[in-house]
Every structure is written in C-alpha cells, then in structure tokens.
Image 1 (tube, rainbow, N blue to C red):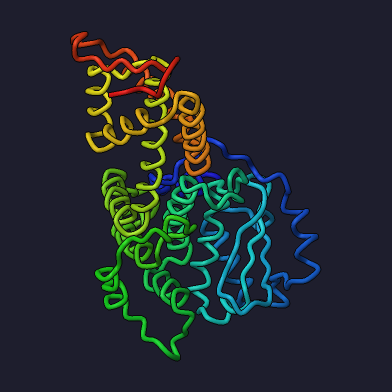
Image 2 (image 1 turned 60 degrees about the vertical axis):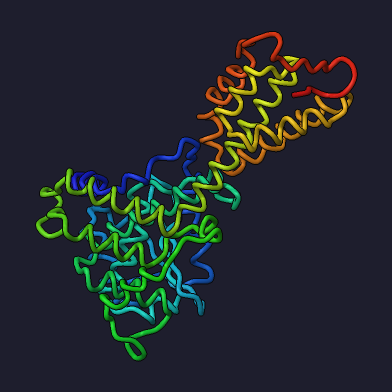
Length: 372
C-alpha cells in the first residue's frame, strides 16, 4: 500500500511545493470524528451503501488504509467538499448533500480522490490559512488543486467522469439541464482573462483545471499505470500548466508581489540616500539604473521638498509600511529577498562621486532635505 502512495506522490504538480512555514494540523481524525458525528451522516455500508462502495474503491485504488479514512455527508445547498485531519494519522472527508445529489457514482469517486489527494500530499497545514492577504500562499493553494485533481483522476479512472464532475460543479447543474460537451466547455477559456480578484482565490478556474487534467491524462502514467510515468513528459506538461495558471489566474498575484517588493526596494534605497547625507550624481545614476528615470525624479523631488526635521521620519515610515505590506502579502519572498534588498540599498550608498563639481550636496543636518 505504501508503494502505491509513494508512486502517487510522483505526480505532484511542480508548483505544489512544500510550504516553508507548514505546520501539521494537531487534531487527529478521532477528535474530528467526535465533532462531526453529532450532526452529520457517517457514510457506512448499511446506511449509504452506494457512497460507501465508491469510497472503498477509491481508498483501495489509492493504496490507503480503510481505517485511515472516515467520510460524512452534511446538509447544505452549496456544492462543496472538504478533507480535514492529521497529515499522518488519518483524515476525515466531508461532502455536502447538494454535491452528492449532483454527481454520478463515478463522478463522486473523482471528488473523493481529489479530497484524499490533500491527505496524500500532506496539504493539511495551518500557517497563513486565516490570512486572506497572503497572496503567496493562495498561489500555492491553487497549485495544490492541480496536484489533487490528478489523484482524483487516478481514483475514478475516467477522464470523462472527472471532467463531467468539474463541469457540474462549475455550473451546479445536472444532466437534466446540460450536455457534457467538454470541447465546447473548454473552448470558453478563449474568452477568459486574469483579473485582480483572482489573486485572492484559493482555487484556479475550473477551465484551467480541466485543461490541466486533460494534458495529464495523455501521460502514460494514467493510461498504463503509475510504473509507466513519463517524468520528462510530465515536466513539460507542468510547464504548460504553469504558463496557463500565470496567464489566466496567477498573473495579478505575481504582479502584486512584484509591486510590493519594488516598493520595499525603493524606500530602502531612499533611506540609504538619507543616511548618507548626499544624493550625488553617481548615486542618482545608480538609482536611475535600478528604478528608472520617472521614479528617480519623484524621489529627488520628495527629498528636496521635505523639511529636514521630517525627512528621516517620513522615509523610515514609508519603508516600514512597505516592509509590513510585503511580509503580509508574500512572507516567504520577504525573507528570501531580504539580503538582495539590503545589498541593493548598499550599492547606492557606495556609489562613487564622479566629479566634485557635479555633486549635489544635500545637508540633512541643516536646512531642507537632500537636493538634486
């Protein structure tokens, strides 16, 4: 069984990297059981034989111990599912009644596999989950959905059922109202474009997920078995999926992270200029190389027009605000980029004077702030 789980982990999407701040959920499945059993329906062979059969088939296909998985159905008009629990001791999967009513048995197997994929890949960590402004983590969560969709496909063993489940989940409609025309459905992506709102979404668009699953199904690891996984082919698929994620979902998030990074770089450089007491031509040229002429002019104006008594405080405050924003939006990048930001600011302070006659000599000890 462990060999199957180990092989399943080989299909992890490359964007689904372990979080540097991951913390395993402390509550074991037994504790969660006591909570859910009071108000939800435990899926058993005697009470819900069809659902129980689907659950057992998936558990066996994924090489998990039946004792490690418990499942519940809860009353809700919303189409949703959840996997909760320890990353090692076991897990609990929960399905809304609306989702169960919407899907066929094989489509339900896809969703079961998808949720158990979170258990297999140890996605149950708590760091940052309550912080909706952590854009970096939301990018990771979206990548995780690509990984677990693959487990769902391997669990149900049917591409049409997997895509059908996602089409129904996207629309909330059953076959009574729609035809499962995947070609037409996937063609909708031609009209899609990234938006800032998507930066704060925990899931990629259903269209991107469907296309990613279609490409994954072309790997021999799906058609012939996990022992035939074509790793180079899977790597190429992952590259294409990454491009689609960036184009349709992650681009606004990546741009937001880059913007706050550059804001920290800018005010770190400005703080270095103020600390040095001069904004020489050489330093201005270095500043312009790093940030461009328009920002150079804005900073020169800001430094020149700000009174000496306020200058150090205002620059320090702007730097502090920018650092706080960066650490919230992208905490891992904030730590990773700290040395680079410091080195960039130092490079401006160290810029040599080209010619004394060309220097600007702002004196932060008297009069106004640095002059150009």
